[in-house]
Image (cartoon, rainbow, N blue to C red):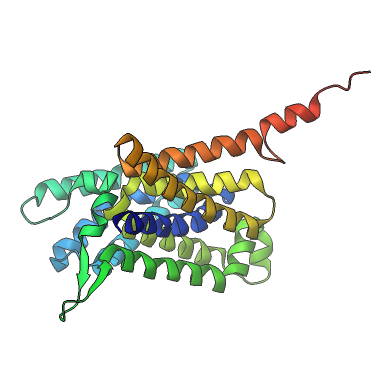
Length: 292
């Protein structure tokens, strides 16, 4: 049963991250997900200091606000200070992540947060934190319920805003011309990334979140030119990586999060080599001269 809960947790995180990652990849903003995953740390700490609780709602609010602030600062530095986008991302997330580390060290006696847990997570412990009702009924791991709610919100966000997200991703000038606010949908997408990131922190850690935000969408990008197919393929690749990564970790007796991230990399390499349209081996075969 523990294997089921762990794989389900990984699959829920993979679903959220893969769907949002498709938009980040196509907007050439993949590393913004990395920036947000680190920069939300001070938001989590401040939310904890104000509420004294690690409940999901204040954590999501604190992290969500810092995620939006992160994207605002990156855009501000890039547009008004004329700093290169990668430099703006690097400066912003290292600065905010460092502030989070300082806050944890200064308020060490009050903040019940572990930096290693934030970075690496511990998905193996998910089945131990059960939600038990007053009547003694076990409803399963709390993390699974939290991630299930976040997954439904992300799917609902994409379904309701599909047209707007699609147009602002592929043709922002046309979207603006027909009255769609690119700014509103940009920050809405970044808020969704922030919420997904912090909801996944405790179970899988920031590093695996970044891997699932980038690798499955990049794999799907190599396999299809149809955007709807890309969304579905990226989710399938993420879920497959969660299941295969778990059994790989059991086989080698290693880190589950590390094994899942490794499988995502293997999926990308397979797509890179054998994709019917963009695979490097297929292209070489097509370019071979015809023998007479």
